[in-house]
Length: 142
Image (cartoon, rainbow, N blue to C red; front, side):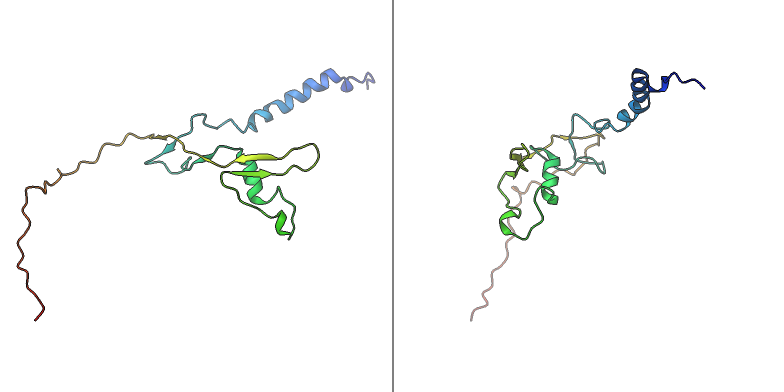
C-alpha cells in the first residue's frame, strides 16, 4: 500500500467533487422548466397560470401569509395587520432592514395554445321592423 497521500490532494479533490455534484445543480435548477413569457390561457388548457401575479416577491408573500415572519404570540400588536397594496416584513435586528412586498396585481396577457374555429350563430333578429302587439287592456276595477 502506498502512503503518498494522493487522496488528500486538494486540487484533485475539488475536481472530483465538482464532477459528482455538478449534474445535481442542473437537475435542481428551479428555472429549468419556467416559462419566461407567461400568459393566461382562455380556452382549452387545464392547469397552467390562470391567475394574476403580484409585483413583489412571491416567496416573501407566502412566508408572511404562513406567519413565518412573525413570532408566535397572543399580543395583538404583533399579529398580522393588512395594508392596501403592500405588506411590510420587519427585520430581525441582525442587520436586516424592514422590507416591503408590493401586492398590487400584475395581470398576465391572454393567449391561446389551440386555435379554435369560431362558433357559427344564426343571424341576429331585426326587432325594429316588428310592430308591438295590440293587447286589449281590461280594467279590473269596478
